[in-house]
View 1 (tube, helix red, strand yellow):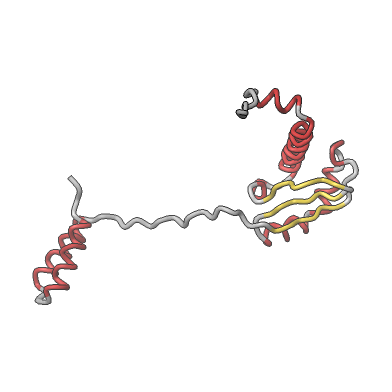
View 2: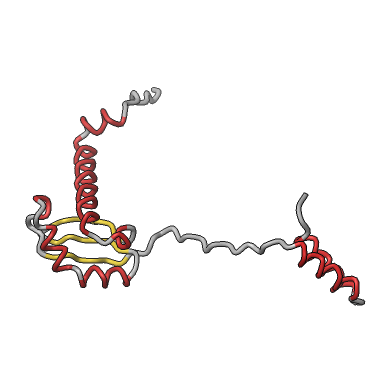
Length: 151
């Protein structure tokens, strides 16, 4: 008795026919719509630090990247609630709850690249010629080679 795999179906067909996926898709679209609406009222700097998590029982839950932005949003809560209530999606909104959740992927710090200077390379070579210690002399020559202009 061999296993017969199910026929492959397009994602759009699955979303339209499968009730669980249909519900998840509808919730995702609703959250996406709430995100767009709230971004229209937020200051531009806060937009990248704030994501809508849910709207349930009159409470809008926002995920913010750090406590700084959570505090700023709490100070603006009354204004935001009043402005958001103008939209039908937020008609039952009574309060905004901010939860701090740092981003899971940390950005690598910018790498500082040393500028290569022919003057520095020349200076290092000249200094290496006058050094008697062979280890230090070799280290200075290697360093000078890093600064030598690429051809």
